Image (tube, rainbow, N blue to C red):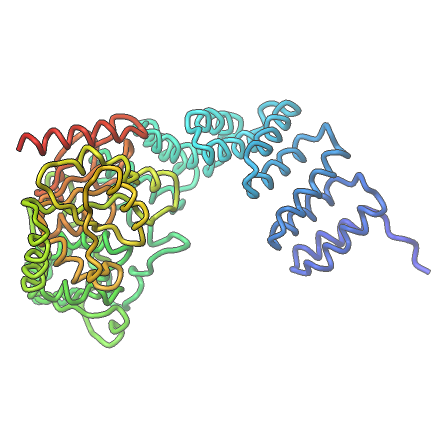
Length: 493
């Protein structure tokens, strides 16, 4: 008979099974250890990790709560429980665990970093900066924590500090694609276009990269002469991004012998065919059938055509809506009986993070605008917002017209004709303002305190869209000031 295995032997086997992908065997071995030795803390950590990876966070939490009862003085155990509680959305309980861990082990860099992530989740950005700073002070070699600190500084509008901190992260990890990409947003926002485009190019190395850098076997265009050459331009990102970067298409078309624009969404094709008669427009799926001299992703044209912010030409109305549809829409909207037609949008469906959500302005806040005299408001808001519209209509005694014949999500050409029929567009930062700006429609864009990189800082004009004015929050969450200022401006015109 073989002698019974010791706990260290069982634990070594469990780790081996876990590392080689034999998860069920590993979990069984950790369970055996804990039956024999209920206070074996390493097994709690490993088994909780397996449960978390299997999607059972709550079971992992229960397990780590038992571990904490066996090791009330073990800081790492409380930190692990805090991580799991944060994943489960139990933010207050997670915060208590992080604070307990730091009381047991002051200055623990990892706990400071995880606590900072939690504080950022809760919107406590200043406190998050303090915790990330402590993490980087206690561990000066962790690029990810400098990156997290830089992101948080950016979100607070502390751009010079963010700039320096991104550089610190990139010094530690020069191939850090996420850090380069986010650093680009700070560089663009602070008008450092000469540095920003190279940093922005690192998006091609992200885990969810659009793939446009390698979709075609031809060489990537890097600013060479294009006389007599054929250039393939590949679109990427969302619809608003495509309309925004299309600003550069008229310029590149004059340089190349032939330009082919491959659109990754066929919804764009009717609009782009009409707007750029000197560019061949195709679907991305068909590019394997064509031979070209060079290819480039549409946004990457910026390095060569918009190298500094002062190089952006005053180019308005480069997208062209269908004139017949536009006239038909205008006639129908004018029949509603008001002198001025204003389209409005107040919500973005992009909810990746708190900064994206900060762009939204509840329609109930729009009273200063919606009470403008002799104005018919047209909803340009995609998605179902009828309940919100009806509530505001009842509150203010107005009518906001929803044109059910236009589905912006299905037909971008119909949406362009709807926007082109209006006298003005007032909107938050979403795809609507890019359509309006690209069509050359007078546009009022309402921006949060920390805006998207395209809008820069401080200025109330937009070099990319000459017919656009920018209205900025003076402080996070304060929409009253820009809405009231915009109202006063429109009343005086």
